[in-house]
Image (tube, rainbow, N blue to C red; front, side, top):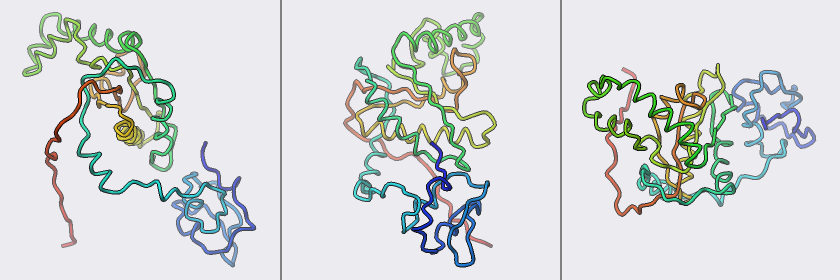
Length: 259
């Protein structure tokens, strides 16, 4: 539920410190001459900054769980050990685990606090085959009826051959597929969805789950039996154990200074 400061604000607690009004990104907090908050304008986007940083707890929010924040070294270890999962065990994800995993979506940042992310959860081999795998295989077979797709696939022609014969190298037999999307018209919708999916994928590792970012399903979603999406994750319990970590990927840092 979107944060509504006008419904939560406890005026008797306000000390006129001015912190909340100085932090409001849309200048939606109206104060009197002494600096006390008196009302909130319609410009409010419900981001909650005013409540989170209020030393007098004027907005009745739960206390920050400082003791629960993991060490930076723990987070870095998690990043370094993360790998895509393409061999999943047959163990299914129960509803309690799924609900806990998806709690991360409720705390994912969105541009202008747009909110409204939808996560479609597809559970089980039968549903995944019906909605994703079989429609994709059919589409590839139609495109490759005269081997035209194989001709232009280059180094990926082997993958086209496997898909044509029905091998599941699309979802890799994952027991669950998560499709993330934002409402139409949300200008930051794609980014918002990717951030939410990222938070879920990182949390999955802490829960003993493995994930695979599935660009094929994301791109092909408009032609499958699912709604278009901005990000797709295969999720399940890994079949194999990792023994080593790979080196960091190449990237570039540029320090830009005025000329």
